[in-house]
Image (tube, rainbow, N blue to C red; front, top):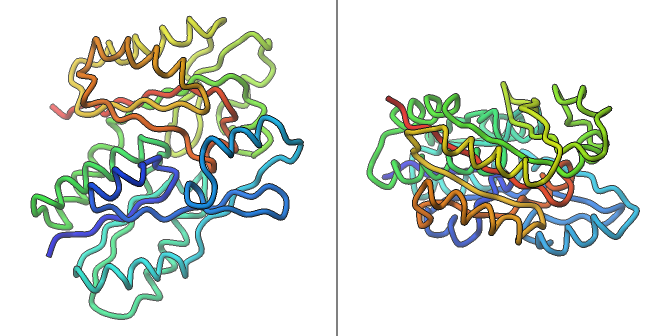
Length: 280
């Protein structure tokens, strides 16, 4: 029996892709006041960003409970003896701890291994996709653990922000704290480093920020996988897609929108590329 893969909704893996890959995606929760929604299940990205931009209520997010993970483990344990869970950075969310707690509650012989990806968005998504592809070809749990852990330091996420106010409000600004005092015209570009948000650079215009993202892709010669995402910026994302598709085959570029849970902290108008560098 093949290893089954679980990830969470901050991976930005679409429902169609999850179904195609045989992936189980556990949703986090986003709330506007007393209204709570399962990420991408009970609220769409379009509806979320509309509310984020027009309402005065700042949304909050909640990790899945151990019970939700346990339910997923028990269901998959009927199909396999091995479950690999790859989730959002433990420094950004308590999702990893919930997955770990659920493992201790599982009764039976099913082996469950949990990896803190130190990532989120499609950087996390590409790890889950890689594992799912390998599992489909019959890779063992130990082979998957080695392959995923080897790829974490080879991920290069870069996120061009329109504003850092949402990241600051949500308490996830991490090492990018020093950029908060920048002029309003500055476009900060951040990454994920050792599980938390960290600054890469800052640009004075949207065009310069987009140039930086293109040059990042162009500067990595051995690309194993590439993703492009946006937070309610489809036109800018399409322009960026056309440019990077001249560097890497467009049919191989994963495209998605930033989930409501992550959008709570990034705000609207985010542009992001993640390169998974091939190992030598």
